[in-house]
Image (tube, rainbow over all chains, first blue to last red):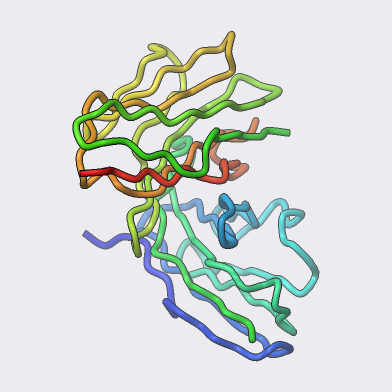
Length: 114
Length: 115
């Protein structure tokens, strides 16, 4: 069956450029999450969507980061003016509303800022 | 705020030996606890979770974990390691809003299986 998909799988960009990362959740999953995984670190929670609403954006690392979601489907995470410290794997997960913790993760997008 | 500590960034065991991966948490509310596994070049997969009820929970691939409130621990075990168990394992705790707050993850433990 279809799982969570993310694109691109790898992205190399120059410092200062903008990047857009995409996540397609499992159909019917109303909740969507973005995480960042730096090398040798655990996952860092960035933002959560319930439907197309993100009630709390305080987890985003800086104002260069933004995210949006169209209805209960695709979400995009945009990083403006990328910096080298943005290099990481960005993971997306989705879950059924109210189903605690059963988050299904995508394979991630590996972002390298040179 | 929640936090998760995984003791040992790398754990090496022989094939057939007991696997023990340690996880301690802090939470201001009754926690929901999870173990995820990440195989090379794959996404995270839920191994098992504790929400309420029985404190010993069984997951996939023969893994189990026991929630010990007095020790604030949720260690992961498997009686007999298999080569296919080699992977990165993450312990996580959910926020007070349940799944809506996202998960707080530990830094992960890389499990190495020696033949």
